[in-house]
Length: 470
Image (cartoon, rainbow, N blue to C red; front, side, top):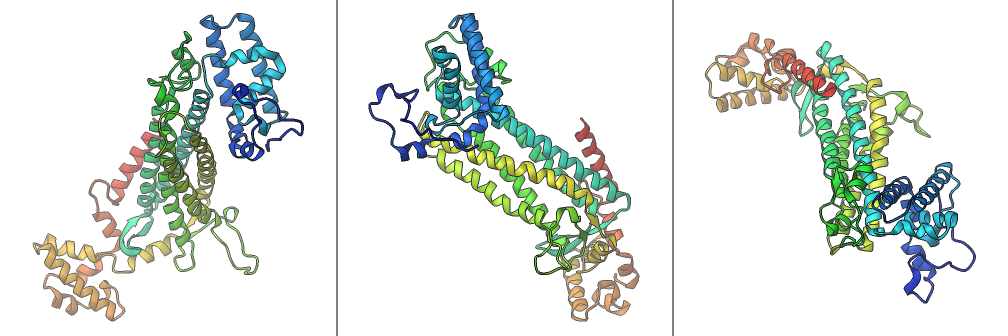
């Protein structure tokens, strides 16, 4: 909601006792954060409710004052939720807007709410609450996509669908399509773990750090932390109000997840082209061209790939902001929120879109198998065959390299070479050996732990399913 600026003479600021001159209008606009930090209203009022309850419990406020302030905060929250709250630019930020609205409702007693706290620890606790909740939400959404990818692996494993594996975007060796899906399952498992780890490390309440040095009031920070769902209060007041590494860690986890989703996007875009023809993306998640009626564009994947850039930028932006800020709080830290909000919003929708789109994507098994057989993808198997017969691998590698050169110059595959050509390259080779080195046999032969052999992939799928259900 766009904040308004009252037309009447600028009212006195809640912090304005020292100032004899009104804030310049352009400074007012430049300084205000209410246009974006109003998003923290729920967290701000939750923090205030916990704070006022604690002030009452330790005897700083009497019961009547606690009830007045609590009821007033709940009324303000109800107005915000109903969309009936006027966000005002002259009140700068979410905290001043809420406190001023509370004062308008219940009078001067509202000023007692700010006893034993500062906007510095107030914004720090609001932002930690939001970022912790955002991290756990993205962890859940990442887990959901991980489950989708695992289900796809299970589905395609039943038919042992074969896909070409690539290095340098050149056909390298055949793999199971299920093995490809399981690679992304592994990435997403680590992504989920990063969000949960980050949430655990940020599970500390800075409220009670006050401006930077703590407070002389006899507050109970542990009770407030517990009331807000934190594991403990921050141990150092300077660190509590002046550090934003929790936001950096969140943005780092977002950036790594975005990189993984961008890689997935790139593969899906390539595989959906006419040249590859491996997949057909669902109509529900593609778009058409305004001029070319035949087009079916992979816009979801292209946008997911493109939006990774802005998520990376949000991380770099905040790193650049905090690198030169001395302890404790500086106004620079007002720049910490928009990037976190944007990265959270971006990934929330990308994860949901992919969880919907992937199961509707059709894989063309005949095309993927045919592509896996091209590009001399079983050449390493020929070299391995010779090595198992006692030929040093480097010698076997050179022999097979020569055969690939021969085949490529004549436009043939290895199994199309004649018996005489194979024996001329090495006496242990013949047409029967070449014919038996199929893509199916190549896949089955790679039975090392973590490999693409069907039994290994089945084990990996079972283990991943167990992890997901734990």
